[in-house]
Length: 340
Ligand code: PLP
Ligand code: COI
Image (spheres, helix red, strand yellow):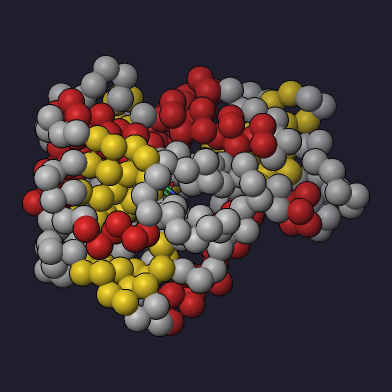
């Protein structure tokens, strides 16, 4: 029986559900993993995650489809990205097939928390891993925990699909060279001050620029950028120091194969942003959130699509992507993992 939750009014918050997946790594191997009802974690005061932030995470969603199935979207890509992250953080790899199986187990165990079709809510799935044993010299842990919890969520940005205003950030995330493309706790810790400051100034997010030249668009704290040119091309920033968004990679396919659009994956200069017709933030949590305005130190870039609704091309991308995710539109081979 579906839980008695006001699905349509959910924000992006944490609601504790009944079951979570837990697997422990010790003496060079992962155990079999199990479901647990314990939502707390008990670790050493000197755990590597607490002292040296040896932690990483992933994010994906489960959806109820139009015909009542429960599915998730490209979990193998999250699994692979976590493998890449773990290698960069000297953490043990959690095998791709086991990751996908653990996602399926966790969603099944919390099936009553999967929001109904058409409610506007989805089940956010958060796999994560951390170094758990005591480490005092700077070195990786020897013991790890891999866990997955789920939580039903609504829109990431307040106001739902209304365009947001963001600002060009003066802060850089302190992602050391070559670590920006991984989903590591420390990369997010270093964006916390920037996001609090942005919110205090009335902006929904930060546009980060490349720290070396501060001329190129990177991403925001939790999403990649997409831009639409006045002649309907999709342009999206290419950079080694942004997260390789699964939503963005999927949208590039959707634009080309489903909508017949030209797609440019390339460096994007801040100076050319004023010439685009539409702008959006894309990610698992953000889906596609339209950006109406970008403020660059008093200079306002206002997109012609305005502050009332999503631009027309962004809307087509949004409808096609969410149509695929919710079973209204046939998905490319391998994109949909059936759970129930
Ligand atoms: N960029 C950052 C910094 C993110 O945290 C996320 C969210 O995961 C994304 C981009 C979007 O990635 P994805 O589409 O894989 O969710
Ligand atoms: C996601 O979209 O899954 C993210 O990780 C974004 C944010 C919640 C960190």
